[in-house]
Amino acid sequence: MTQPRLNISPFDRTVWIVIVLVIGLIIGTIALGDRVGVTVERVSPLGEARSTSGIGVTFSESMNRDSVTERFTVTPEITGTFSWSADTVTFVPDHALPPGESYIVEIGRGAQSESGRELISTVQFSFTVRTPRVAYLYPADNAPQNIWAVDPARPDTAAQITFSPTGIYDFAVSPDGSQIAFSERATDGTSDIKLIDLDTGGLRQLTNCPDSACTTPVWRPDGRVIAYERVDFNSSLQVGRSPTRVWLIDLTTTPASTRPLFQESQLLSYNAQWSADGNRIAVFDSSSVAILVYDFTTGEITAVPSRSGTSGALSPDGTKLVFPDVPPIEEGQNVSQYLRLVDLVSQELGYISTPDDPVEDDQARWSPDGEWLAITRRYTDDRYTRGYQLYLIDPDSPADAQPLTDDPSYADGVYYWDATGTQIVIQRLHLFDENGQPDNLARPEIWTLDIASGTLTRVATNAYLPRWVP
Image (cartoon, rainbow, N blue to C red; front, side, top):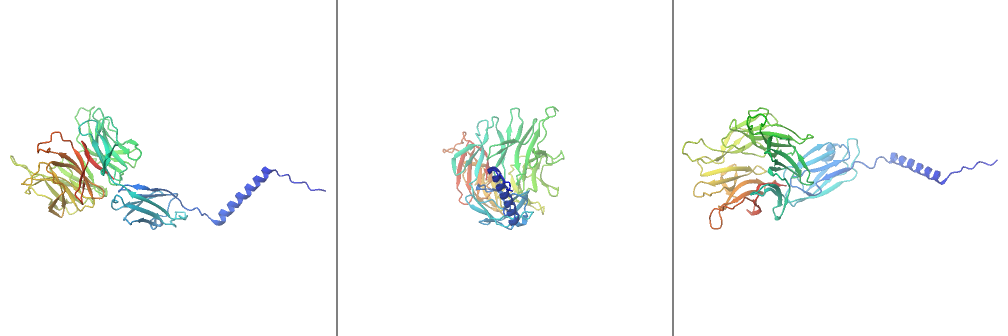
């Protein structure tokens, strides 16, 4: 008898071949083990970075954190701290990175996930720190004012950031330089805090102030909370406007949530500022005529009596406060404002200048490292100038004031250090024309000052309220 022949079509043959190959692949994978390992899904910054940028790496799964940080290097070496959020590690440098510097970041092979899988090859990426920009409001002499930004080395690069038809009241740049929080006016006199992303142009409203003025945003250094000032109009109650109070915006919630800084309604706070670690906030309380320093870690409030009406300047570490004050005023007496220094730990009270000094001191701002104070001052003796000039002071030797600006034809106003402590941006007003006569047509100008060289550069005219954009 003849055996029946197995009739296999070409299609069946193809199917069997595929099945055999798949089985072979499965067996091979089991035999060889998992050779794919952990992967890196995202790194930042890449290419260009801001001086205050953190360095972030996102993995494909949860990691053994020590195995990552042990293999994390930055060249040139910088110091900093690590923080984790889910599968992302962020390295935050202790100090702002110098513009123009290039860095190489490596995560060495062998970093392990919680399941034991490894990073099978070293990950490397690089970035260069860009030059900071200066943001400001323009035009000073016409409405509406909007936010503009410029590279101070190239004043012709000024570009408009916001396009509000009703105008911007004030603004603040986020610590990492990626966003700007601003207060936008409405036609009915109210205002709200909004947020613009400088990379995408995306807009987001943070407050809901239909019968209030919400202004003066101030970022906490970690970028997660914004303090602002709120005045309620009480239109339906017919009791007049409420006093100014500081509120907080929590950006970690969706949508962002708001609440008063103090639950006690008798604390009438304004002019908020944060310490660099975000643990303390200083405000001025008009009800007690004092600066209040609130410690979020302990809940304690330190009151510093002051008649100046401002919260002064809180040192980066939050342990010292420089604030303007005036002596008790007697009838017919000319009084000059001076600067005091209080150690919030020891409660020791001292002076930067005294009521007997021939000076009138206005503002003070700490350098980012806390080593220096920049102050605006004018002397009342033969060194008198009509406008304030900028001086640099060592708080441990306040008598030795170094002039940073020395031009009696200008008055120096609002000013800020850059993140690296090497430059200051200043709002200035031209007081006299070339003939020595009052310049009645003057408009505020924005200048930058290089601390090391003393070079002053005008970067914008008819502009005001400058801020650094890292």
